[in-house]
Length: 202
Image (cartoon, rainbow, N blue to C red; front, top):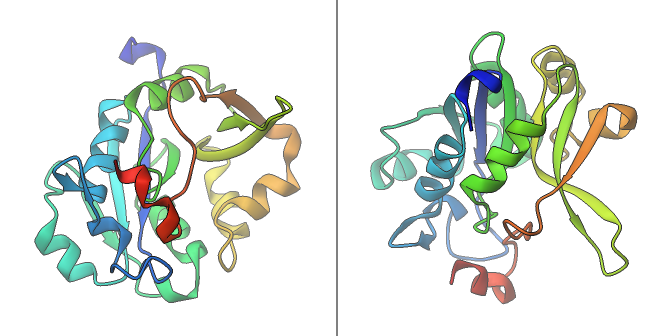
C-alpha cells in the first residue's frame, strides 16, 4: 500500500470496558499471542496503515498502563467508561490528530488483522464512512467494526454518540454515507463478549 494514496487516519482503539460478562478483568489485559489484547490490537491498527493510534482506557486504567506496553501509541482515559461506549468514542475522536480521518476499532475483536485495516483504508472515499462488513448465511453483508469516519464527519458523529452506542446513532441516521467492505476473507468480525467465546483468543 502506498502511504501517499491513503489519507492520514488516526486509529482509535476503544479499550475501556471492564469485561464484566467474562469475569476476567478488563478485556484489554486478556492474554493474546504472548502479549495482551490491547497491545496486539493497537499494533494491528498501526501495522495496517493508520498514521498513529489512540488507545482509550477506562476500567483499571492505571493497571492497564502499568501492564501493557503501549509505548508506540498514545493513551487517553475515559473516566466515565461505566456509562457506555459513547464517552470512549468521543474521547478517542477528540484525541485524534486534527484534520485526520478516524478508524474506530474495538479491543475485543482479536481476529482483526493488519490486512483488513489496510483494505478499509484503501477503499475509503473522502466525505464517506467505510465499515468492515461480514456476510450472514444468506450472503447479506452486516456492518461491524472497524469503521472509518471521514475527517469532515467526525465531530458530528461524536456529538451524536450516546449511551453504549458509540457511532451507531450517527451511522443509522446517515445510511447513505456508509460504504460496506467485505473483510470476511481476511479476519473474523466476532466480538469477545462471553466465556463461550474465549476460543477466539486461540
